[in-house]
Length: 99
Image (cartoon, rainbow, N blue to C red; front, side, top):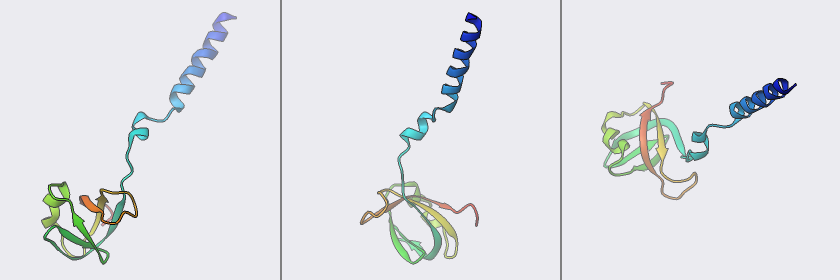
């Protein structure tokens, strides 16, 4: 009888461990993302995506890659502030995978 109880306890423990969320999920910070087409030639620390002008954070990976994007390309831009902030800056800029 003790062996049967032990197997139930071990099974319940394994189930509880298997159903817990990953630790990484709880520590992830939410960052606003903008996806759209580049509508103006990027330069001087700014880029226009879908007719909205965004500033690029100085020294960021987006600033280093700014010269590699052209009008008409679909891009993903990660902003530094929460959604709806007044002056968000682009931190990361990459080509949209579906383009």
